[in-house]
Amino acid sequence: MGEQREVARTAVRALDLLTHLADGGQRGLTARQLSELLEAPRSSVADILKVLGSRGFVAATDDGRGWRLDARVLQLSNAYLREFSVREIGRTAMRELASRTGLTCQMAVLEHTDIVYIERQDGTKRGELRLVTEIGSRLPAHCTSLGSGCRTTSPTWRCSSRPTRPRS
Image 1 (tube, rainbow, N blue to C red):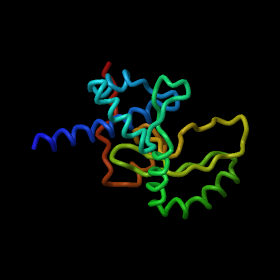
Image 2 (image 1 turned 45 degrees about the vertical axis):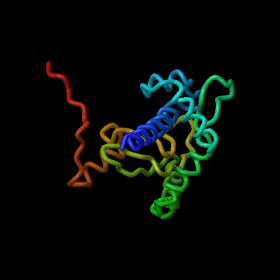
Image 3 (image 1 turned 90 degrees about the horizontal axis):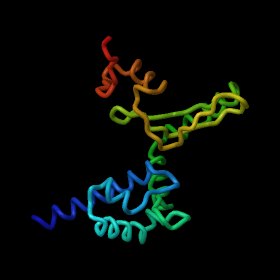
Image 4 (image 1 turned 180 degrees about the vertical axis):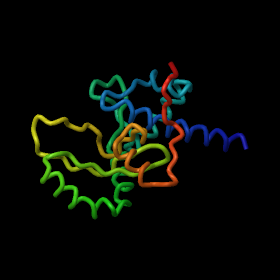
């Protein structure tokens, strides 16, 4: 039983490590930073990085001081996105809308209390406000116009993480 728990703990750490690297962006994170974030010994983090690196999920940053996500993560992301046939259906309409208005058009899915962007067509207007949300990025639904749209069209949707105003 103890060995199974150790394997589960290592799996959780590996997944959490990937999530931290996703949040860290291309500048990456050092093994020390990952160790602190995971509250795990550096030797354990080093072992996880070695395995994930050998499988193509992580790689050293250009300066060699940290770690970042690698191409295998993109392959998994694309496999996930292929599951959304609605992307294929909506892409043409989004392209036309972006072309007609000159504005960026985005598509997202509601996942728990977050909006996850699954498609984007950039507009052509210059000087307009540019959206920086990337496909696969996640934002709290209550902070986005897409999330507001989901809330108004879905009678069962509830957002338990909506901030409340401080009372004066």
